[in-house]
Amino acid sequence: MQELAARYGLKTVWRGLSYVEQLAAKYPDVVDYYLHGGKTAVDNAYRAVAAIFALGGDQQETLDIPSVTARVQAALPALDADPHYRYELRFGSDDFPPQVERQRLVMTWVSGHSGGGPWVAVDVIARCAATTDERPITIIGQLVAENDSDFVHELRDFAAFGTPFTSPAGAYAGEVDAPGGLGGRLDNARIMALPAREGLGANPQLHVEIMNPDGESLAAADLDRVERSHGTDGVRVVLEEVHHVFQIEDRYRLPGTSLRRTFRFADFTGEPPAAVFSTLQFLNVCQTPNTGRISVRHTPPERGRIDKAWAPDFPEEWSAGCAS
Image (tube, rainbow, N blue to C red; front, side, top):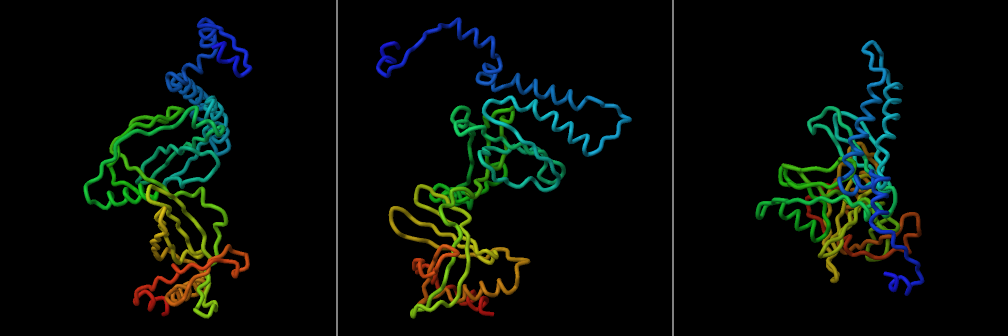
């Protein structure tokens, strides 16, 4: 060791096993965290929380919102001893909590019933960028899919392009290794791959014009890049019109240049009728020999690029519906 360290100008000190044992005796929480999953720390935190909520437990006492909130805030520091993660709690009822977007959120644990009723959500947030390397959260299990089922095709799309999917109920079983006592066995579970909201790339706000062969602008629409993913076959990008009238999904096969573009109507209930009508007129002129010109929103459109995929020649019934 001395020779190896000397090559790099480092001075090494060998303290021996007794020194390590002294550290283990001085910091038993570290040993517990890495060798026993923090079981002792979690148990102690639960006892501290229970003691806080037991204070003033007189049945004659009237509990109001401020007093209950104060107890919750007093209990939270008991759960803040994890060296790698911190935990934030959310409470609600009926519909399950929505997915939140925040920096370094790596896991959300939810307790409740899918049919409704109260729920509790715990957001697990990494304390630093190295957290997931030092203490990763892992899931190991088995996903069962029947041959030639719709789910099998969804899994193939996920592998090829990163397309989101939701498994049938009971199709997954496995084990979650997570800190803070949030891991455990999963049986008869459902697994979902959610749309990727991060990594959308530069300039996700786009402006599209439909041009006739003479270069005149016939109609225009604004779109946002809302999803982007990749897999073994290529890249997938989803664009959504700003009034939610339609979505397009592009699948680029790489390293070739083939493109598959899918149009689908979205739920534009409650959107301004004039905006919806204008967008339908835009779709009505998306046909040959016209072409599309796509640019970054709020920049000169003439600086955009030509995209011939904006003339897919919709079915007659669709074009007739847009025109009417």
